[in-house]
Amino acid sequence: MTQLLDKPIEQRFIHTGVSWENFKAIQTGFADSPGVRLFFHEGELEILSTSPEHEIIKGNLGYLLEDYLLGQDIDFVATGSCSQEKELVAAAQADESYCFGARKPIPDLAIEVVLTSGGPNKLKRYQALGVPEVWFWENGVITMYQLTPSQYQPINVSQFVKGIDLERLAQCVTIESRSQAVKAFRQVA
Image 1 (tube, one colour):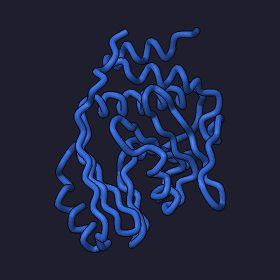
Image 2 (tube, helix red, strand yellow):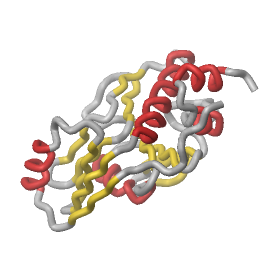
Image 3 (cartoon, helix red, strand yellow):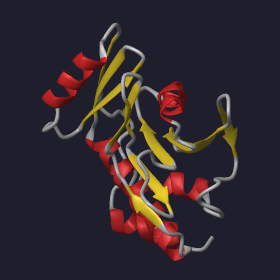
Image 4 (cartoon, helix red, strand yellow):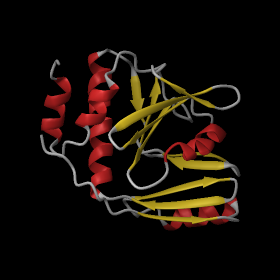
């Protein structure tokens, strides 16, 4: 099994006191910049550049999850890393996102790959957007959170993706070869 390098190179910039109008102008400026993610919440702008390691894990995670959903006959719409926004309040670009049943303005599930920074502190953005479930892959572990009326709570079972082996999924996404990752994930233990 081929594993990824353990020292990814990613850059992160955070600036506070940014107006929604300035955020939208900056977002337009980065529109044609692959590998750059923009986040906004109540005046705080975060710009994150992703590494090849990040993109491999993100791509494998999305592919393996979609393969599982297809195998379980779960109807979904993959909305990828498109920007979700609540005007004047928050904007986020999940690494992967999904709607179940039909496409919605805000996805049912957002997934973040965390290599150098971020993690559950990003939940405030997703809460402002009203995303029902958020997953974080970090250090080979997937943690899940479900939105309650007041905040996110950690959960052990997804409300949308029942029966998936998260431990196996978290391990297989780090295999560089997508075909080897799929074979390892499909392999019955």
